[in-house]
Length: 110
Length: 113
Image (cartoon, rainbow over all chains, first blue to last red; front, side, top):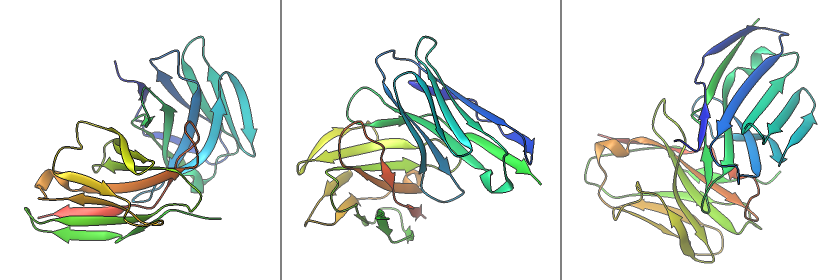
């Protein structure tokens, strides 16, 4: 079983929509979770960082962790065309490495 | 805001040649990483480096790969004899402590012909 899994998309939404992006992870011992945004041919850019269960909000972005179901989510409110990118979830897995999901490609249409 | 810088942004090399990819991590960070992303695929861990030695490496990081921190600022990835399948984006990352988010550079696009 892969440590972190994401639906690859693409997910296409109209401008202004609420976007929900999701990941599942395999190991209940994982505690630190991150969301990165990656534009084409650029490095991953940190969006959100959460520890354990609960919600964290930053502007239009909300990260949610549900440890009971091993499920992490990123919500984007009032989505903009500039939000069009690939969104990567990540967690500190076994060992000294950050493990990424495969990414979900988001397209926000004007 | 401090950032991780990588050079060159694009490197083209012939199969069998050696390449060195260079990175300058954020200055007060202690943990350093290389990741790889083949076009259209996921970001994959290659190696982590702490206290002047490799702390972890993946199956991808075979004997053709090596890392070095030759001075207080640079962190390099060397591929001794490149193969076609080494063509990918290579990202350097750093963090001040374990379990903290990684800060990534914008990558070096390596093309092996």
